[in-house]
Structures are given as C-alpha cells and as structure tokens.
Image (tube, rainbow over all chains, first blue to last red; front, side):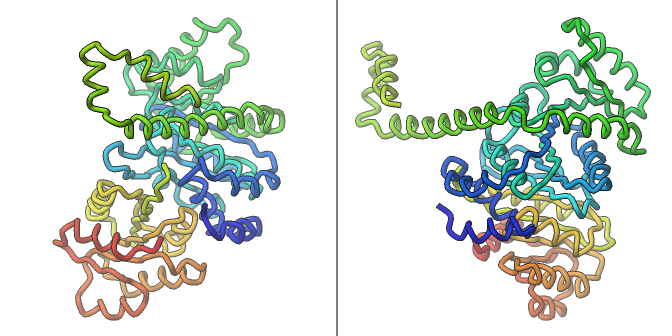
Length: 306
Length: 132
C-alpha cells in the first residue's frame, strides 16, 4: 500500500494539481489494491458528466476532445480529459501521444494513461480515475479510448454517454465497424466535415443505422471540422442538455462492472501462479499430451475454491 | 499491472521546430519499458511544467536546438521547484555547447546529452537517477 496518500488527498481536495496527479498514479498503478485510497475518495465525489469517445485511429478523437474541452472551459465548466493509449505487450512501454493535439488548455486537467495491455480500449483503472476527478469537482470528464476501431465498447460501462468519431477516407470503415457501431450508442460525430467525402459517409451511416434500427429519432449525428472549429456549437448544446438529464444515473452498474473486472484480474493472477507452481508440471503436461491425463480435471482442481 | 513504470515527459520548449531527435528518444524510452508523453513543438516553460505536474512524470527530458537553452531550461527547473516537484529528474538533449554544461547543471539540469549519444546511454542514465 502506498504511503502518504492521505496528505495528497487532502491537498488534492484543496485544488493542488500535482497531488491530484499523484493520487491518480497510486490508483492507476495497482487498482486491485487501491481500495483503501478509494474509500477516502468516494465520499467526496460529486456527480459529473462522463463522456466516452471512441473511433478508429486518425478519425480525430483527440482533436474533437480538444475543441469540446475548449468550448466547455470557456463556459466556465471544469473539464478533465483522460486519454488512454496502448502499452506494448513486449516491453510494457508506451507512447502516450494524445496530448500533442490538446495544447493551450491551461484550465483543463489532461492525464494520459496506458491501458496496461487490457482489452476493450480502456484501462482497468479508468473508473477509479473518473471517481478521483469527481472528488475534485470536475464537471465534464472526457475518456478517450485506444483507437483500434471495433471492440472498444467497454468505455460505455463507465461513461454517461459514449460517442463514436468517424471520418471520411477510411474506405469501407463503416462495414468494418458495424458490430462496434451498433453497440456504442446513438451519438455519432462525422469529423473532417470540410472534406467532400464526409457527406457520403454521413449518408452511409444513416442508411446503415436505419437498416438495423427502425426508430431513428433517438440517433444523433453531428458534423464537425476541427481545423476551422465548425459544428461544435450544436454538439456542445446537446452535451449540456444531456448532462442535466443523464448525470450518474447508472452508478450501480458502473461500480458492479468494476468490481467484477478487478475480481477477475485478481483471480487470473492466482490461477496463473498456481499453474506455474504446480509440482512436476512437465510430467503433468506430458500426461495431457499423451492422453493419460484429463485437462478438465486439472482445470477443476485449480479453480474449485475461486 | 502492479509495477510503477517510469513516466517521462519529452518536451520541446521555445521556437525550434525540429523534433526528430525528440521522437527517436521517445521511441527508445518506450522500447525500454517506460511510459512516454510528448508535448509537441513550441511549448513555453509554463506549459511544459503544467504537463509534467498533471501527468505525474518522473522525468522531464527536454530537447532543444535553438540555442536558447541557458534561458529556457533553468526556467523549467525553477518552475518545477516552485510547484513542489523538484524530485522530477530534468535532462536535456540537443545542440548544447560544453561550455554551458556547468551553468545548466548548477540550475537543476542533471543529464546533458549531445548529438551522437547512443540511446541506451540515455536509458541507463534515467534508470540510475530517477527517484520513485
């Protein structure tokens, strides 16, 4: 367990940014054992509006967030950005590059974190980080997922609203994203709207959504252009309206998902350790390969008490 | 999960627009298992320090080729100190004449790496000097 976290939490609640960053690091490095820290965080949380942003690499997720954060910040809203990028499976290292596109946001708290090789486009610790930001009274929190395209629906589990950013020029990207598009939600951003192909993308998107969903009234499509800053007024208006209605409605399902996920990763470690420390593992493996040993029995004997 | 990784901010202060070296260092540190955050070009010392604080980095690695190192680098080190972050290791790389090394070292810059430095030397220096 980390030492000195109480001091950092006190300073963080007083508005100290460096202490906020330290507390996030503590929860992020070892989320399974962050329970004691989080006990001191939860009572201070004030509901914020959490916006998950996903989409393929290069569609403009960071640039869209930059524009939205800038607008909201100019309306005196307290805004934070959690930008998630992948860690290398080989070395654990990461190049966290989302910040480059978010310069000049002096009042916005931006934090880059690695996904620690987790699947689903976000880090296991992301929920805790959002709670720490809520304790610091951030009103709008953006979560930018790893840009991989298909399977990043986990951001939905911890967001109040999830938006998919698309841009023209990705070929049959819509096709490739079909499964993901259906599941991410009903808000779509057609970015790079200055490009002529963007209209076609929008039409394709509407067609595709209509083909699976008869009720298209609940679908929202916004056209944005980050170079000229166009199209953001209506999107901001929409987000502010939604924030009044939706804020923290599904807190129980969020914490339950987190609980399951952390318990699973703890169980995974236990199982891995057990299998690795089985006595005479090589004979056992030979037994499986030669047909003498039943692999299901080995599995059962190692997980019965978990 | 569980291991605290070394976090490094690669920063380009001032007006030079050449970041090939910064990107090579960023990749080398990433491949050495560190989490690397790049600020992008033409940042002010205040912007760099804000990013370092928000990101809770262990190292600020500054790349500079403009010749303004004696002005900009001590400013970054002193702003970190003002914000209670003088535990962060500050290193510099780029075109820095040897005659300026002593002045920079007196002003909080720990490792100085000039063109031609093998990247593993930078990795080793950071691992040996970082405070976690």
